[in-house]
Amino acid sequence: MPRKSRRTVQRADPALDRRTWRPPTGRVARAATASEAEGEASATARKTPKKGKEPKIGLRQLLQFATPLDYLCLLIAVPCAAGTGFLQVSILFIFGALLDSLGSTSATGVHVPETFSLGSWEMPLWLWFVCLGLGQWMLCTVYNGLTDTAKERMIVRYKLAYVKAILRQDIGWYDTNNPLQLSTRIGEGLKTIEEALSPKAVILFEWLAMAVTGWVLCFTYEWRVALVILACSPLVLLGGALMGYAQQNGQKSVVDGYAEAGAIATEVLGAVRTVASLGLETLSKSRYDAALHKAQRAGIKVSLLVGLGMAILFSAPNVMMGAG
Picture 1 (cartoon, rainbow, N blue to C red):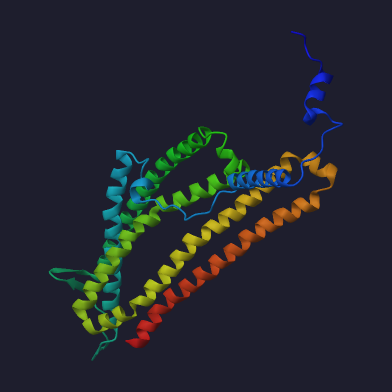
Picture 2 (picture 1 turned 180 degrees about the horizontal axis):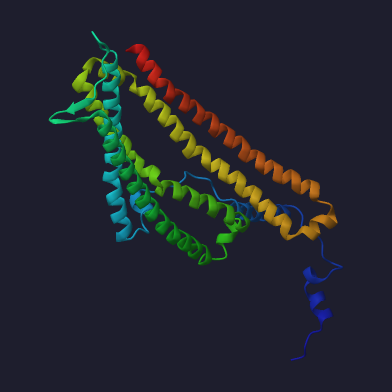
């Protein structure tokens, strides 16, 4: 069978002949344009992932890399934190009793007690403060040291798991996640995990012990003052809730701004010769400043909300004293 030449094939198919080909018009052109637009839209949707609700993790997921030794450290730290809170209230109670006794006078002048009795226990006043202070210092040192030890051990495993999770991703994962932002996001993410695993979490049990001990002493010695304090306690809850909301929801905006700025800096430094040859220094600087301003605005908003929460929180004792 004889072969057909290139010229013969071009003449047989007018679409391949440059002299006879014409751009499509009418319905065919509109269909082609719609197909191209749909393809561009789908590509844009793949590159820009939808921003849904941020996932939240529970305590079990947070402690997923904990070993039995880490659980043992946390198990010992919790009662030590509760004991620290109990001793703190006890010191304040004895100090308040000392101030009340200083106001009482006798024929010889102001009476200063030398001993203090708590039930069947009676000791010199200075010995009460020494014993309670040493006990609080020891318990506080133990629970802070154990919590920090468990945190550092788990953070090492978190870093290894983070790197392994990034390295095993498919190539399509990098189309929806900017690789230049990974270093910043890893640092900020680990910082958030460190704060969640820090002694701040165990301080919750210290504050709970202080609250329970304080309410028991209040209702035991003066129930009317305790009711006044209980009526003003929503101010404390409001201030704490506002501070927690600001730190939880505002931190993401700050992280996004710094991640975008870090990606721009990495991109410019990686192609610094191209940027210098094309004279794009001013444009790159404006992009970097815009990303930093975004993080700055988010940080200012967080600081204002935290400041408002602290103002409400620290004004609550004054309201309690005024109402009592």
